[in-house]
Length: 546
Image 1 (cartoon, rainbow, N blue to C red):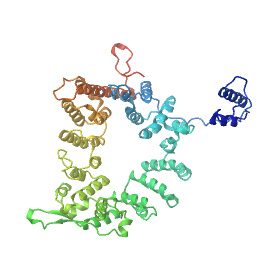
Image 2 (spheres, rainbow, N blue to C red):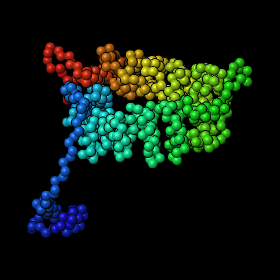
Image 3 (tube, rainbow, N blue to C red):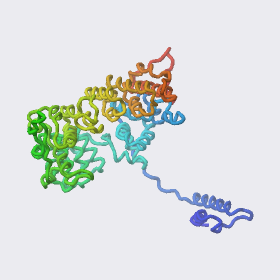
Image 4 (tube, rainbow, N blue to C red):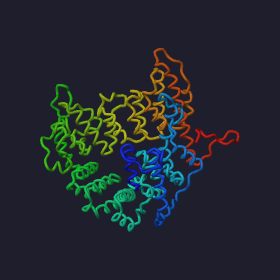
């Protein structure tokens, strides 16, 4: 029987298709398997050797220093991914740190010290990056040129080639090599090259982009244009102004956004002229003894406005005029409002009442402008005091928008504002705000978070309601706080009216928090090559089994 016929019989079944001839007494299924085994031997025995494939090129050299032995063992442990969530029953995480959540922090610290990845761990590292897109930038930087070489030999790791880091790019000072890769390289290589050159010398990157701009595809032009956000300066204005006439609407929109982030650009001046005709100071409200802001939204979106990036059609549920007004205000330089509204400071402007229900729309547009122009003074005014409830304060009640405003403030001020917000409002609305604070958290912020968690425990609630914040605390608290938090690991007496067993759950959560902080302290010390303390000269115990 031919192999194809055997496959057909197997697919249809021996009841529906005649099995091959067999010895007397053999059942049809057994005879079919015997025939398949016979054919397999014949096929293998008759196989002619094929020409040998070409050997792959040797892996490139990685000049970075090797990891300290302890850090290498720690990386192997983290890549094994033994998560504490698998250790407990009934959904309980137990007290063991979640190793998978600590891997990004380890990679960041290792890249900061420019260590090379151990060759034996590259497969596990690439598998981890394949499974988690958030790991890829740090994992590929750590994997370096050998990781990219290895990725080229396994189709499962081809994502690494699409997101290749600067490890495989030429020195941005080598003009000939840069020009050659720009003209001949793959799209991912060209994107990475443009970003690398932009970080080294913004003007050189702009000149490189200009050499091929007219011949690029629309989607490629959009990606290349987006790379100009790094190092954006007044020297980019001429190029971006030309991009306002691009045939792609997305390219035009991105160019307009970038120009509006340059307060001294011609587009910003045009937007200021339009926006300030819509917003003015109304002194007619004498009955209340004060002044207010009057708003007259645009009545049309003309061709010039559209060329400058104003989208004429609003999304569902938005009125046309308010949609146009918001785009004008968010693209105008914030400095224009001081002159327009009587020389007032941002705090005084934001405090003014706004007539006819335009306050929310106007303040939201100012929020977007403050974020786009990275204006800390306006961000402070729009955030208001941290003790003010979000739904009654200035600016926006959206915590996502508030997070963006906070990101424009200096790191220390940002942490102090969020700490005061938590002290006033608790943790229920602080998760997004904590996400923009620098790691490790500053001492006032860390203390505020721990105090709020302690208050929640004393209130008798279950810790599951605060699992997100507790997870952030494990990754973001200063590891040096572990000793101070040890007292919270004890199981408190159950209070009357408390949820049954809540004290035990909280004790477990704080034990995991303290254990994770100590784990982080150890892994960061290992990356620094600092010997861990040894009691009595014995071999230091590993915090968790490898």
